[in-house]
Image: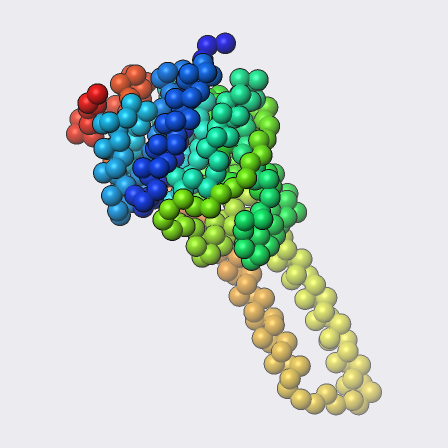
Length: 336
């Protein structure tokens, strides 16, 4: 088979501290695979600036001028990690045979990319990067992550355990994924739905090379909740079941009260009454909030707003033939 054109897509948000090392390592990986004739010499990396507030885009522009591997996308605003990643994947598929996605923080092992390509050449359309273990995580993060994966599985969502967004996808899988039009993106759940031949490559996750994590606890919880509500209606069904259970309990309580009245027993004290009122009121608010969450997702979907807006493109000359034509002012020429 002809050597495939590979693009490595890297979402970036305020990554000026780590970006020089990221570009250096990925360039070395691409150089090595080209020398081994595993990939085409037209292979590149695509750095997607997700509305960074630091010098991330200036660095991408500078690297693009000096490094033939570096291409870039600048989103007009911060669209979020999943949308930025999708923007890069959809751009790269226009001129690539396969695409690898990896975060800029260098926690995922860049050396594993070579194994991804080997698996792709063996006939796999999707190659998942899966962590060997979570020994490097804190006890809290390990417990919450394991709980999340178990919960998603129990809700019927097909998701790969200990896999984030470090994966290889072939062009035909990306073509099919483009047909998934939902605004509420959870790519870890969408990719397994494609059903193409897939395999896993295991690796050890490292510490972040530089800078601060862009996923604090608040964002991690929001991301997990989005994943659950985007792929399962089980929470709504749980509320329904809970409603039936409370109704059954209320019937039992009513019978108990009637019997007490008949036999002349007086029930005194407000504690049980107040607890019941607060409990039922809390359940009702929870149910309304959950229903509102789903209605909010429907509201976002029916608007059909674009998931991202691309402000600038810095592409390789060969890629410009297949890529959508950017505005005249958005392309900066190369200087070799």
